[in-house]
Image 1: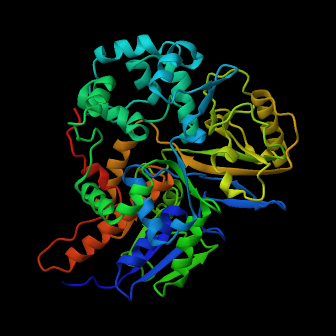
Image 2: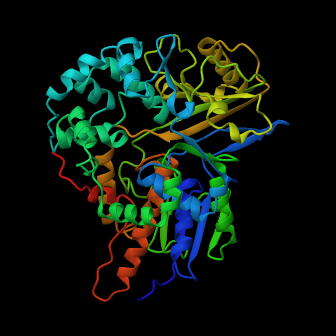
Image 3: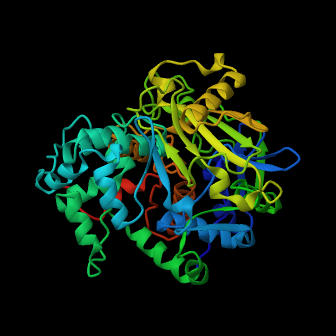
Amino acid sequence: MQSIQPKHYAVLGGGISGLAAAWYLMRGTPPKTKITLLEATNRLGGWIQTTRVGEEQVLFEQGPRTLRPSGLSGLATLDMIIQLKLTQSFLGIPFSHPASKKRYIYYPNQLNELPSSFFGTLTSLFTLPVLKGIIPGLLREPFVPKRELHNNDKDFDDESIHSFVSRRINSHIADNMISALVHGIYAGDVTKLSVRSTFPLLYYSERKYGSLLKAMLIKSSKKNNDSIIPISHQDQILQRTLVEQNKELLESVQRVSIYSFRDGVEELVKAIENELVASEKVEIIRGQAIQTIQGKRINGIDHIISTIPSSELKKIVDNHHSKSPSLPHLDYNPAVTVAVVNLAYNRPEILPVIGFGYLIPRTTPNNPNHGLGVVFDSCAMPEQDPKAAAITKLTVMMGGHYYNDNNIDMGNISDEEILSQAQDLVQNHLNITAAPIHALVRLQKNCIPQYYVGHYGRMKQLHEAIKSNGRYAGKLSVTGASYWGMSVNDCVLNARKLVENLLNSDFEDEKIGVTKKIITGLERVEEEGIHVN
């Protein structure tokens, strides 16, 4: 078999997407390949940040704190964990654990425990304020016609999550339960985010079956193995490969709901970093941001993979004398800032309930500090703090779209003020009046991109623009949270798929008479397995 000629790749950004892209390139390319990883700051890992504090070495997560083993993206991360030999540090939380079963929504002034069983669901439908109106909404849902599509729709045949849920069920559920969920995942505004790009299962259930309930009933049948969400040929092959290669681990995580590592999620970052540093192929340059990318071969680099926020990429590609932007939509979606406050209390039973934590919907009254949710860390991952068994840990998240909507300049608010706001919130919601023995405030600026309505259509236009642009076609690819999914799992999977596509394209390029395929990183728009109608 003909081998791929070694090239020089540049990876922009040292977050999990950039690290994963560099790692997959390192493993899949010939010996003389050069890989340059450029990170503007002095640390790698992006929003994944784990810190231990105090004599007890209490573990605080300022970014992602747990991962899920489910789905193709979960498989990709599990496969990476095996290759990195991290399984000895793996901490899995089973579905039977309170952190998996007990989750809450704070509405309007109390904790509503979300049902985790069939009988619990029946009771909750009649008793929980947050689920008020869901029964008549569900009864009418199968009879709601699916939304007509218009090819010239300015929103690219898309709508907001709030519009979708209000139309198919009712606005009470959209305002309360769904807005809380959106706060927990995206720190975003349920009235602005795209249902197609954030909750594709809902979108494609309507498009394929005409009803959410009908889709659920059909999928619950063991005879139906079709995926509601379109699956590309590449994803099908990758799924089979990963399942076949990791049977032993997959059997062991069948009952696992969420997981992390003994020293937090940053263990994953450190393991990737260590392998990159040890490789002769890889050079890591920290504290240096690229200013512009122009020309057919930029400073001897054959191909650039950008994993930095798309708004930052726009500044780079537009840093020339052209009057019109060279690539569209890179700065269309804003990103939101989240204040993350870690609190540790020297009391083991300070919480009124046990569970993973709670989320706060947009309709909750008396939310002056713009709370999004609170995680009960010591309940979810007690094994991470062997020296602090009597300590209760919480993480309070505030801000998100509220900061954007209210034009709040967080540069003028001190860490002390943010800490005070977090303490006020847990006092009002959980009646915790004690002072924490440890606290850590981290303002994660522009950490979560917001997939506004029409995101999929804009990515399709960006994909075509990169392919047809003489300066960037075949020389620039993109991946990362700005494009297709922002979880750690999504970032790992998308980086892997991009690298596989690039290497396959390079291999085809070596063949005589075969036209090389241009890889942008946005191939999802070409891969939909069903016709959306």
